[in-house]
Length: 506
Image (cartoon, rainbow, N blue to C red):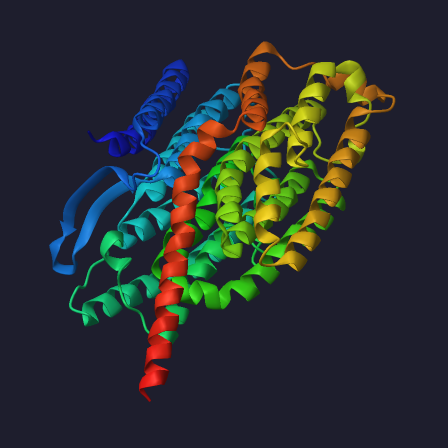
């Protein structure tokens, strides 16, 4: 069964087909492609055996001269992100049906094709088990995302697209050097390969391992995005469409945290422990800075972008706290954040489309003219502040509880981020939804249509279902989260034992 290849190739093939198909046929093809990938992802989730390692494996020799493979497979962590990607893409496509594309933008057909391209390439990234293959798809996602930012959105869309590309390309080139370094190191041991299953057992010198770890982490930190390499995100989010922002923040940015778990910790466990204090400090800074920046924003899209900077700080903190509870919380947070952030971006998109402005100060009293929209925004906002009963609470609480035994100061400071989240979400709701509507709001802020409600309701339903009963996700994620921690602990203990033996021998 080639489930992973099929799930990724179908949207990519239809994206190419949309270059010649127009009108209603383009919409139908795009929706069918995204639903086909979703169906395949659901089939994989049904067939998946938690804790059984890599599954749905496809492996074929690709470049024999350097032992590079077309190798795909997913564990529980990869499968959760495959599900996230295939759930959100049909909703973004459905959202696109309500968009009005301006004359200075590329058309709907191009937008649909680019969305499908991001989906297909992201699915390859989340399932690649060859380091070179992962890198190629990691970089390839930049192409459709560049055009989603630069071809659509606000007045500074070209500036935002170039900034996004420069940050991503420069960090990606550093990772390329690290990928080459991994191969050279493996070759020096007589097994030059890019296959992840072989490289997990590779011996790496202390200095070499640290350099290679830093090379990978720089690229992942930019993608995540972490302070201080986060500044491309608010500009990109502000100057693209809400649908494009969902594909970028809710899906593509997960590649950064996924890469940290799969490659940075997997290939360089000793270096990961060495770097942990610095990464934890940066994660805590991201949590607090992102929340404070969100509190200071007047632009709706920038506010949601900065909330994600804060939330990604929680995810990275949980990963590098390296306890089973913290890592399980982080992997669950990647899925839950994607659902919550998608709901926020799409809802503020509907608000911006009606009002003709993204400034919070231009709203007020919307709940009196559009109560359903106000109710949906309240639930999405409460999920962003991790209200108990909604999905992000379980994951954020898990990160803090799991971090406390090893970094109590980091857990304590990060908990302040939850308080700040309540402030910026309540400020957002109060200034846009409460009070008396002015004449412009009364005239323009109409209620959500049935199609618009259909886009948002599945996201809110997932937030409620997984907030009350997260077991289906935790059953998939927890065994592989524990395995990631065990892998690092075993490598560090073996290194300590070797060092002790060397000292005793002297």
